Image 1 (cartoon, rainbow, N blue to C red):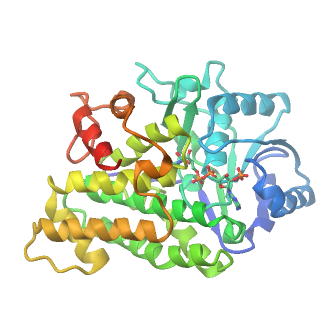
Image 2: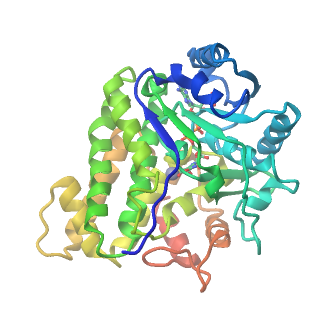
Length: 395
Ligand code: NZQ
Ligand code: ZN
């Protein structure tokens, strides 16, 4: 292992911490742009409480509302313009991963005169790497992406049907104010998708990373086991604050860089899923629940011992030997059954997606950040035929 780790985001976690929003924001500016989604926080009272806290601390605000799930580049443009026009000096993202991601790119786009799509990796020769952004405070209302404490954002270009990512140090939020009370109203399906998303964040590095990372393996397994214990409770009873808190903490840890430190490896399941949600506008976590088990069955053939370890440590299965494929595949079956039990789809047909565009999905996936041979970085690296095969098995 050879790595460097730095995550500058100040994390404040726990039920009730929303009331600290005003003072925390005031440390970064006097005029805030609050970025919000489609209205859930207005209906459940979170918005009013946030505004009251800002007002009490002497922070004025404007609202950039209507960020859609799978946030669009045109929405980012609109928000960046609003932040400039209104002379905001700080941005608050109050919502799910889509709101947080849009707010991150808005914060950087304020200082960029070009097209913000230049920042998003979509196969262009020289992506624009932002070096400046307005200070950002994230207040997640859904436990899933980990966006509240990382430097990544995923944006869709609705004209070209491309969904892809940017990672830049300036996009690390200054503060992540993580209050599990805000997630009590998340509906069952979105709760389940969030559980799937956070588990997939750690399975990506667990299965695609380098060998010889025993402590990181245990971190990843800890995240998975915690999510599998508390996720179903949060799905069954949305008002279970303890379950909401445990799931949300797991979601933060899953993608704030700690589990991945020293492991490296790609994000093939995410890269494939982003293309599916670009074309069909489905929830990210639902897409992952379909792609991940299918990808696992493909990858297990190339790295059976790692999948045996997963089966053994997550599901307590007993292999006959270190590369026991039957055991490896049983572990994947059990994982898929878990996803189904909490209410995730595991087949494309459940989302009314057929086989018409399989090749196009594969080609789009490979366009974003291929390796030197044009393959999708992963263990094993994948070509167009491999991706089509995986998706076909998920029909
Ligand atoms: O828009 P509103 O009305 O708020 O409703 C949302 C939306 O319909 C609703 N919701 C959020 N909080 C709620 C709530 N409903 C009731 N009560 C609450 N407290 O949930 C729906 C989905 O919201 P969204 O933000 O889209 O979900 P999620 O947090 O799963 O974010 C998904 C996006 O994040 C990207 C995904 O690709 C997708 O675009 N990702 C971002 C990552 C990152 N920045 O690190 C990594 C991830 O792997 C992922 O790719
Ligand atoms: Zn994800």
